[in-house]
Every structure is written in structure tokens, then in C-alpha cells.
Length: 79
Image 1: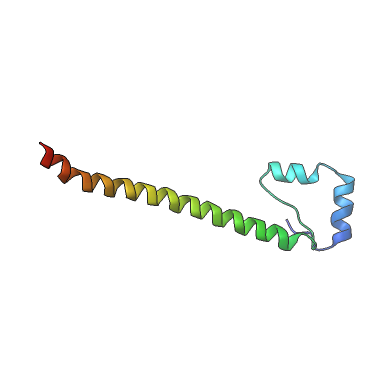
Image 2: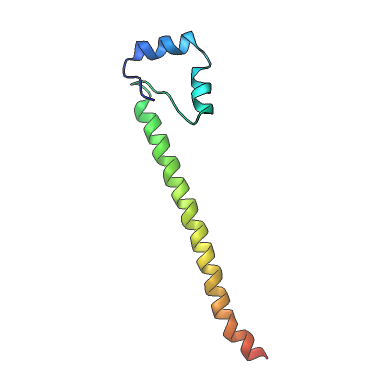
């Protein structure tokens, strides 16, 4: 959640020190103007890493399938 007025954001956090933690527990994040860009960059980096992880899993899966396909003729020759 973006709070565009920094003093209002600071006042809200001072009034409820658990505001950030309770928002995080609900899979939300509060941000003011000074932390917005950093927060967005962190989120973008996390999405990028998640996509890379999915790609690595897919590469491993396809590599395993390729290995099995290459190994099948070899196993038939051994018989």
C-alpha cells in the first residue's frame, strides 16, 4: 500500500508500531515516498529470481528427459 504523504505514513507507524508487521502477515506492504522505489526494485528482483528458479527447474526436467532419450538406444545396444 502506498501512502503518498510521508508525515502521514510516519504518524501511522508511530501510532501503531505493528502496522508494518500486520500488513506483512497479510501479504501486503506499506510504503511511503522515500521507500517506494526501493520497495518496487526489491519486488521486481524477487519476481525475476522466481522466474529464474522456474526456468532452472524446467531446464533440469528437459535435460533429464533428453538424457533418458539418449540413453535408451545405448541400453538397447547393450542387450
